Length: 463
Image: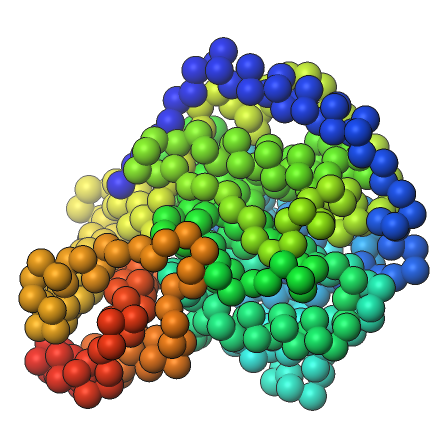
């Protein structure tokens, strides 16, 4: 399960120097004129860690870290809306109660963070209602929404697990089509000037590819393309991560854009420059783990905006020296985000004393996770074999549509097949949701409700 990448220090130094040169050149070329000023508008931010559980520590840590960056840049609490389950701060496993960190030897990022939507108030309905500024649609929480106007700038940051065409929530999932529909409503309401969205999730590109028009003045940067996983980092057994917390502290894409934001003058750095830094850093992994930072929407029209246009205009002191910092160590070790759960359970098992109740319980949890994965692999394979035969069934799992095409043509069919599987076979785990692409491909080749139920009833007989 463990994967790591040791980068040649000379290559890293060369790339780092090239980044410095690029930053200097672009800063001289770009003139941030009054057209980019947000003086006549408001800066809004929506930050959502859509997971729960100590195993997913890194998501809430990242959202807290993002809040601290925006707050230090001058955004007001009334304009920053935070979604976080808020269950890790005093979790039994947390050896530092009351404190959350997002990097090894990092400072506490939890203090002062407003918790607008916590627990089960983190759901698709509330998330979309907040973006749309629709207070009447809320079902709990602080009531804060993005009550924005035509001169306002909006930043949205999502972090959690994803799969083809979906982003996870504590209960349920957000489908790409529903997110795009909400963004379209926001655009048609003329409720913003420009919007920037950063998404940390596996298969994050599938939420926008072939779906987000350039004309909506939205710029999206994702941790991965439509067909690959993203990576977790600062994980246990991977120095310099602390040994006491037993879980990953961050995700590579997320810590990259945040650590970059803390080491540059954001009034001079552009979104384009930040993209290059983040892209280069996430590419340092082996071929099986390499993820590609992607962009969608109005790239040309927004990429030269300063980062401060969305993260806050207030200048703050910063130190930027031409050296490789601790956060850009010569050895960057990462995990496939879908393997973090099983890595955590394996780590807990290895750490427990032989013969102890803790060891026995860790073994049970590990075996349960492995068994669930095997069952999901088997179920999908059997369903596809019934519908297409073994060879063609494998093609349905693996086929990725050409670049620029959306995951699926009929989103209602996609939702239906995902729902039918859950109804007959149980909810797919984060690992199992990778088979959402197979569901989409079944829709694209004409599998209907009746055929799917026929296969499901043969494979999953427990419902």
